[in-house]
Image 1: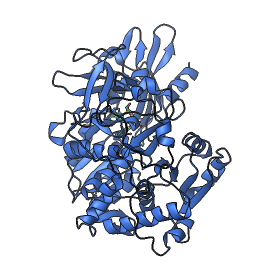
Image 2 (image 1 turned 135 degrees about the vertical axis):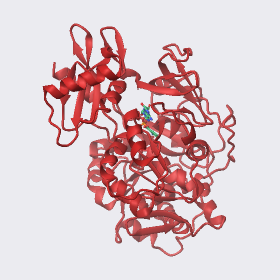
Image 3 (image 1 turned 180 degrees about the vertical axis):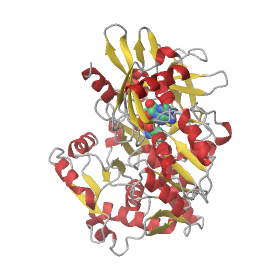
Length: 546
Ligand code: 3UK
């Protein structure tokens, strides 16, 4: 987008424009430089869905789930019926926020698209959120209407008591659910897409907030397409015959992009398993001949134990994001499947992946290169670029970028038009980016800077280790010491001899000063709703254990 004013909004309710940060605190949005141009009037659902019907692909498969198969035409009809129910029966006007609460079900996909097609703003939430966690986005985004899977209404009803803005909860997902009854009305099969602007907000995605209150990130209609036309077109390079699946919740933009937007942009199919643990993912890949998978590094590691006797030869593209991909996981997956994992770093603020590598350019252990359309650099505390090979703060810009909903933390994420992701990275002489740690997760021990993830990556190359998390523990002499929390593989006993062996293993693999002076064996690691290791929780444990 140019620095000029907004296009004329198609929203009757001006909440989004009223609550976007002031223009001067936005990152640069570089559409032209990315070779993108979208018409001023744009409803992304017309591009993702309507276009396939108009161009004769209505019979192509769009959604596959247990006992369900929807063509693009089937999906379009569901979307139209929901959009009619929203606007004719439920009082939604364009610009209103609608909360969505469901797992990765076909109706969740249809509801998402219907809200956006009707000019609304989707506020999707993860099924595991409880009343207290639902109340925050409801209040912050001033949500009056919620569509909710009929099995998940209890917590939302409870949240209503803490969020007076919420006027109505409409259940869906069962034959007799309220939404299904409304959808069935005659004449509801057609719906004209709302005449929105390309820079009207269509999604407010809340960060999973490892610390502090969640932040609402605001995304435009054009952003939904931009991620497909950059990452999708130039890095993923999937085809209309591909079948996509994965585990991230659709309320997490990693899942929305990977399971819904990327396949729909090219008319491919999405496979939505009811549950998406490692075993269920393997089942779904085998049963539905899935070719593209989006999930987290730990899930690939866990899937390795479930592959015996399974036919996953349909698989060709495996994307890993959400957390750093340890080289040990890359190597093990490639040895077993002959598929190189495609690492990529994304962020809710950026909507999706902005550094990654196409299959032919992967360097194991590195996150990759800036996605075409994006630029990345490494800066010091003052925002000055550092030399190649030196660690510093990752800064990126491209067609998408951070706009927090009424939040002072905008000023911390955006500096001089660049998005500062909060990660410490280095760039090598070939332009590849190497993850070091979250900037606030660096361990400082006896004057050395130590990146926890590097120690974790080394520990993971030991056969006894299933998962691990490495943090700094307070130490009177060294300031901090490196402490590892280790989950062992089934059947392995954690004793002093093994702890010693793991320490020696690290000393032999990386610089010895980085070895974990303390090791604790645990049954499980604390994780966020999006599956990320909660290092702050480990740090708190380490504090208490001194
Ligand atoms: C970390 C990574 C190393 C990094 C996301 C793909 O994870 C996503 O969004 P979140 O807002 O978190 C962003 C932060 O997560 N991270 C993500 N991927 C990697 N670190 N290597 C990686 N490959 O700290 C980043 O700042 O939850 C990922 C697509 C959409 C997303 N929202």
